[in-house]
Amino acid sequence: MGGERPQADYEAPACAEPVEHTALRPKAGTGTRRADLLPTRAAETTLAKVLNRRFLGKSPLAAWLRLNERAFALLPSGALKLRAVQAYARCLHTLVRMCDSRTMYFGTFFMRNRPQLDLVLRLVGQRDPTAPALKVLVVACSIGAEVYSLVGTIRSRSPGINMTVTAIDVSADAMEFARRGRYPLYGCEFTGENIFERLTAEERTNLFESSGDCLSIRPWVREGITWLTGDAADPALAGQLGTHDMVFANNFLCHLHSADSEQCLRNIVRFVKPGGYLFVSGVDLDARAKVVKDLRLVPVTDLLEEIHAGDPSLIKDWPFRYWGLEAFDPQRADRDQRYASALRVPMRDPQVGDAAWA
Ligand SMILES: C[S@@+](CC[C@H](N)C(=O)[O-])C[C@H]1O[C@@H](n2cnc3c(N)ncnc32)[C@H](O)[C@@H]1O
Image (tube, rainbow, N blue to C red; front, side, top):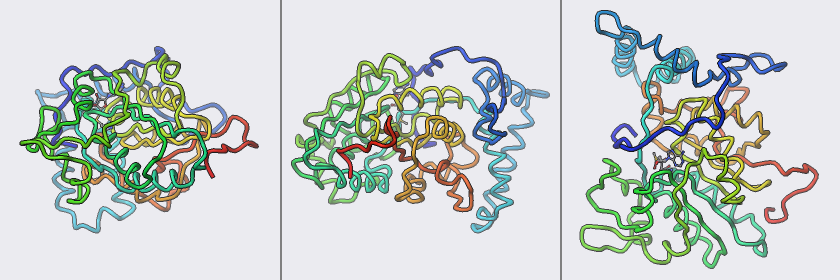
């Protein structure tokens, strides 16, 4: 993620409501678990100012983090697995997130998280074939690689599937690029990374046709996708989009401050049908765990660890980049709530299942 180009015209979506300045206030009656202690946006800003304070023109914290980064680079490969080292690294990551300013990126890859796609196929396979069309929504889709990977994979494995796909991003330029589905072989203005690097040769031939120095998405993959420009944090959006069987909101909430990402995630849950699935990775784990707990989302444990570790670009950047993702810790008591990026939205009446899914 580090090599991506920042989004030039990005303005972080504001929280829907101004937040009360009640930093680090535990949730009433539940004890003080870490996920309940998310600072508010105002508290985050104040903390960042204090932590980034400079003496003689230099930031002591930045210097200390740089020193730690160098020391970590010298550690033998097994050392990061030690519990004491992990606990220390988690503290460092918390500090990095508190003092680092956020930038939104467009960076993306085709077939970015393969285990997540495997789970999608398993879930699609469990659907009643007579159920109405599968409704899919991809939020913050950037230049479309995630959407085409998903649609190409589902249509290849379930030919003739009846599904509707909507993709949305806050950037009109990225949406226009995505809609065209023409990707220059040697990079584009949106990302400095090789977006094809995770594709096998077979997938590349399956998804694209070659046109000069570009690869163009094949018509059978492109057809039937609705591309929209919109802000996922907009409370009015759920009314316009309706609800979906599967919603994907990957790799953009980590670029928001915790309180904003929590607020935005709560809004995104409203795009999912009761009984449907939400896939949300690349997000502050404390913020996601809080929403999972508050809204009683059900963690999907199938391929839990594989999906968590499914995007190497996030794991390698932990703990010294704010978007870095901690390694899966199987010992944690809150393991499923913390690490599941596939979540099921409960039915309104828990006694009634969803007939569309087995
Ligand atoms: C790093 S890209 C992620 C692309 C893709 N989801 C993936 O996983 O590869 C982040 C995208 O989020 C979009 N974005 C940021 N804030 C948004 C918002 N509030 N609503 C919709 N899209 C947003 C940005 O424009 C950018 O295209």
